[in-house]
Amino acid sequence: MDAEYTRARAPFSAAWKTPSFTSMRRAARNEIERLRLAIGVRIRWSEPTTLALIAVVSLSAYFILFPGVDLAVSDLFYRAGDGFFLSQEPVLRALRKSSTYVMALILLAALAGVGMRLFGESERRTLCARRCGFLLIGLLLGPGLVVNTWLKGNWGRARPIQTDLFGGEAGFTPAWTLSEACAHNCSFVSGEAASAAWMVAGLILLPRAWRAKAAVPLIAYAVALSMNRLAFGGHYLSDILLSWAITGLVLAVLHRVMVACPYAAAQRDRAGAFATA
Image (cartoon, rainbow, N blue to C red; front, side, top):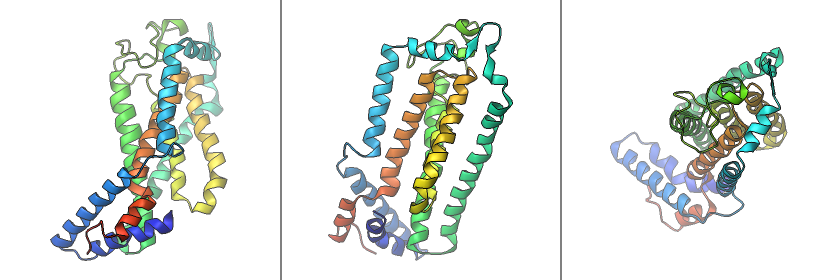
């Protein structure tokens, strides 16, 4: 796929070399055409975009049909008189705090990758910058806009610790049900789980040979961060799983558009579909 991307990318790299309005306009037109062709390639059932969409729909249907699952799972971490007893565990609190540093490290690496593109022209740097740009925009759109701004800001679902079943005063609200039980920074869906899912996408910054080895510990760390919120009474199980699925869908669509550059698009480029420099 990288070799196909490199062949498809060649005319765009050439267009950006000349700092003139004409070349910039031509490069922008090429980018728009490349995106149109990439999006237009037939979506396969096995690709991440399709799988993420299936996960969102399946999980949504499950928790709408069986809302009691959320209560049953949260009840495992709750004790009458002690509340969510694991919330004071030093190890779990340190685990939650560590996410700030891991996320900052991935963010700095992505920014550095984009910055390297400003200091030289090469296919490798162009591809690296595109991957880093995907990660940065993915953070803004997934955890930032969709999860924390749209869903958490509008659905009004009270956190487990805020509900009357677990020592609070608000009523329980099933997943995807609009409510006024919470005014801000609400439970549906989990922002920290969305950030954890985004961290997993940071594997794209590593060389291909390293990704499989790094995937297992990074996924385990991301899952632990997400489930930590369940143990603390900060989120229901549906908040966490749907946050992963929704963030995954946003990232999958963005990766398809920004990075994948399907083989069919490269073929059309060689046939002359793109404007040439």
